[in-house]
Length: 465
Image (cartoon, rainbow, N blue to C red; front, side, top):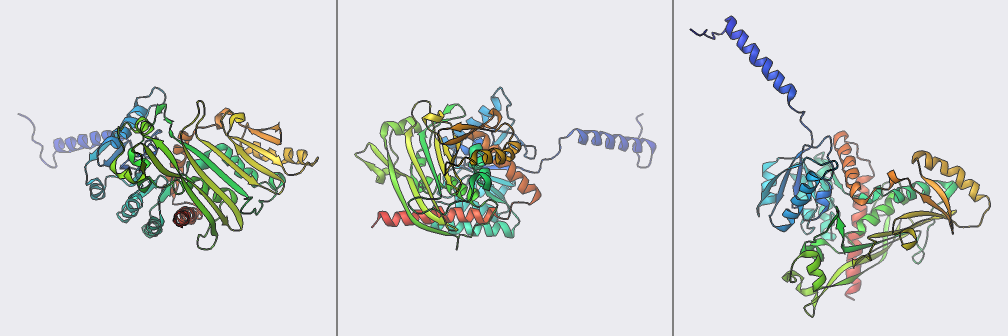
């Protein structure tokens, strides 16, 4: 006859002890719960996938995806699967997908994660940001977070909600991690090399940043398929409020390192303009895989075969007494062997710091130090002061060039654009965990989006005169 497990009996106590020991063993084998659970919301842009090109110690491997379904979602999941399947450092993401027209409402109701990643159609992005914060989610958003003045007003409210609810709202500024830009900033803080930043004028700014992008491009080794809405500025945003956010951000970040900018008094836009890039129907087919222009593009089409895209822009403005110029140009396809390019100059009293990315540089960004005067003492001065730079960035070295010196980089510092997404994410995770976002970040995000959206307002008025 089997023993009865009577409470208080030795058999009962032994059985309970065994259960507790087994439960304890099982718990010790369970992985520790990770504090960050990602939600990917309507991932229409390839940057949403690049956020997951790496794994992170604090992020759970299960990611909740909410989207309306369709090709944008399929392309996103294909990219994640390609990262999971690659031979070198494969990722281990598990995507739990909800696809339906009520995707946003479903996300808010289910509360499966605590960080919303936003990179897609920008038409409703600011609204998604605001309502996600109102419902208790932190937000990690691709640029642009606002594409017009109405969006900027919502963004101001979003930052207030984030502050009141102790949540984090942060945008993905990858260009701060491009090494030649980092070194340009470092050198500008070295009076012995750079001197002081000039004030500049409207016609000869103290700082100029120019970016050239291409619709046809490769991402993670594959030809990028663009969604058709990407070519509609009412959904993607005009160039003056889209890619321009990076350039305006860098002007603030390099000219006024670790300082807060007050957009209500520190910024004065003197002029802004916009213009179009034309795309043929055959080119449209090549990058979208769609045989005809969608109806929402009708107002921008001429002769049924040519699409006019207002994706280019220029801003001339004064920021704390410094004259700056930023410009963005989109071409269809880069010449063979080239790609997106960046040009930047900071004019100092002792030297100009110039980033070029042309044929002479083999279409890779190179930083030059070009003295203002032919001063025999400058060479010894630059050698002495550059030691601090080379100590901070081991392997960085100076070489003589036609107008001064070029800065050579070791291979380990020459990262590509795609690697920068992990670096921004690591910053976000630190700020989220330690509640230590720098005091200047939020005012400077507001200053950046004020500059771009106000510039668009000015450019649109000028076009209509």
